[in-house]
Length: 307
Image (cartoon, rainbow, N blue to C red; front, side):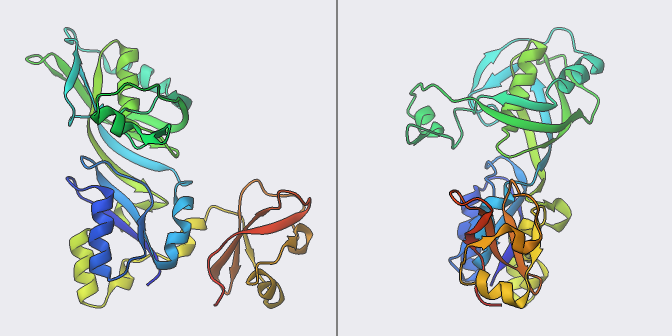
């Protein structure tokens, strides 16, 4: 069984929980996920199966879309609603929608983030959440994130009793963006401690919520012998990369992993990214610029050597 399964991850489960359950349901060990979702977050989690595991890393190149909620008035250890409160500041007078929108607009483009302490980023060979759980402080590296869209989707709601203010939003962002941190940084710029009080991932790896299936549905399809209805082809992971369709002669060279001249494929300049080689409409290999020999391409990853 080879392909990509757009899974709808339910809340309360880790991404690894999903992989573990799918290995049992699909009766195969070759299962991996293409982008972690926190336990409190539901939404699209691309799952790679069989030869699909060879393209996991490339699913990260596609943008992600989230919808969620930001709450002003207090921040938490985890930057979302699951953490303990670390700072409070009453919102005595609600912000206007215009003030919120203007500040949200300043985050569009390339921004700098500091990853949350409760994240899987490694520092000195140890994950940040391990430091956090041990109560240890560590300097966190900054990283860039690309925000293509960030907008409010509901009227801000003011809670006069708890002195908080919340609104829902939608964000389209690139690889490695921490939406929790986006919420915290937005609140800080508005003058208040804040946290991400809700989050759902609507799209990831080129797959949308409409294509995603639950674990229960996967189990049902598997029992009925209809699992192919949920599987997407491996080729979907490389649809945004330069594509070259191979002749029979070129295929013989590619499947043997030969180094090949750029000009053999009619390319005038070396692409900045991987080239996806297809044979008979199937993804067979990924090639890249040779690091030492100008004008030559070398294999980066073999996907199939039989078609």
